[in-house]
Image (cartoon, rainbow, N blue to C red; front, top):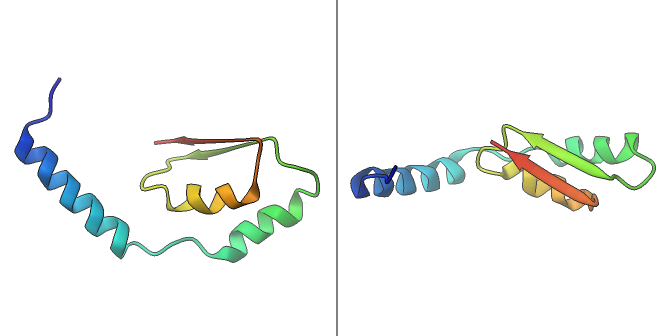
Length: 70
């Protein structure tokens, strides 16, 4: 089902404002994951990925596969 142009424009502008205003995840959280996984990570799944802020941080862990699900 196509999205009305007005709705699409509103979402586009709202999503950008949300992305800019929402704080990121602390690097300490990523370092904690790294510390409890001494071997190479195989797959990381980010459930409820939303804007992808955590996904981008998880990507620094260099897992074989990173899956983001909203």
